Length: 281
Image (cartoon, rainbow, N blue to C red; front, side, top):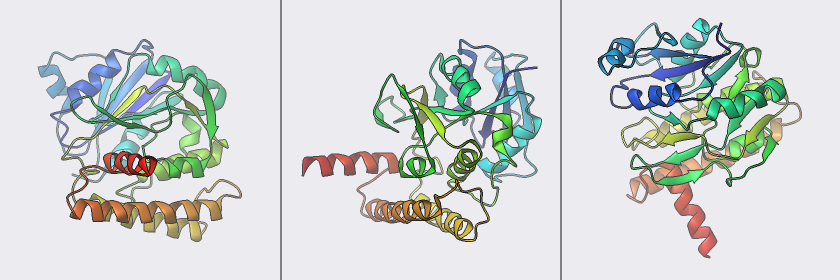
């Protein structure tokens, strides 16, 4: 049985999935399975075979419909997973060589780990990293996670996934999942080197002109869950999380205004520009 099951949500990913899968095949650690969850009905294994990418560790499942969202796709992949550890890689992102070899030993000790995600433009230009690049490791709580403007893609012990992703959330479902995993584990360990490239494709759901509206709706749903105590919130952090999401919603609305004014193309670029402006004052 594989040690690590990699969950890959794939929706209309024909232009990007080859690079994503190739980045997994290039990993130093080889004891993994990659489960592609097709959310558009496409047979991605056949597509990959056309590019001469064939490997017994590649598997595919389908969601029960079309466009059900990344939460439903990851849950479908999770249901088929056989590994003791889970990792998450979307079909439009890539890993750096050595990512699994660096993070799996940490996950064995800490339970829940991630690297310092790098947000990148399609041409390879670095927009931002989640944290300053470092050779050290440190622990973050749920509030630290929410305050970061760059997604976290964890490697975690299987039991920390609980019931999986909340499929009613069509945006920020990864934030909700990570917060609940932190609640079960106590903290998330971060390795300061950027080993996952989160690529800001212009046509991705996170970068369409109305993405801020989807974020606003999702944040509202998450706040309601926290207020109703219908969520695995880390002990003692309810008020702090509500404050963090209130700040995040305000920032998201400012991003929406910047998009409408033609001053922003992606949220990460908006954050990077905003940070530069603050530093210059």
